[in-house]
Length: 112
Length: 110
Image 1 (cartoon, chains in turn blue, green):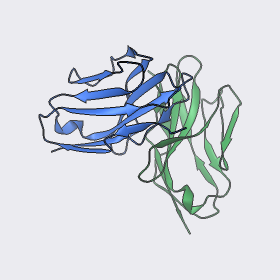
Image 2: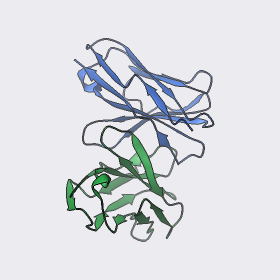
Image 3: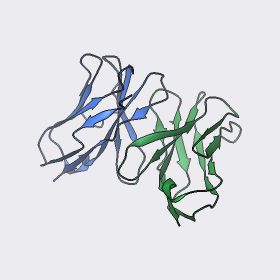
Image 4: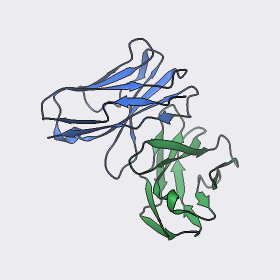
């Protein structure tokens, strides 16, 4: 069991640039989730996939955010035209059962 | 919508002290509660869970009992260690996404 991995671990970008983060779930897990965590807060749900189908995306923070999971394995989260308010930790989790989610180490985004 | 309220920190305890972190929730349906822990510089780790009313989850000396009548899932440990210093998150699942509390930072001093 190699766990959930995320890349990069840290990303510094200038305002207005696009960024993409990658998440590789635990291999037998068919569900994959994205959350955002800001300082002093708990994780906030963004979107999730069951296999390659994106089943919930209404919580994505704006239309600048999009996620894909093209073959039901890894997933990417893209933020277009980044803003300073996008600075946060972006967490990925995966699960086999609906509720017991296992989290990756996160990607810390800093927008300057 | 569903929400989780947990005890605000930070909490500072001496080694071997008793720990309680309160967690209550409001939810529709039949929620499943969880505790996650985040050690410094690391990701969230599932600490323990419960699946039905009066279930007691336990792991690494931590325990929590799912009390449906009081909508609570308080975390306890009888004797904390310095290595327990971390941020603890109570979470709830009624639908697939988890709803988290704000977290409680615990510092244990020798």
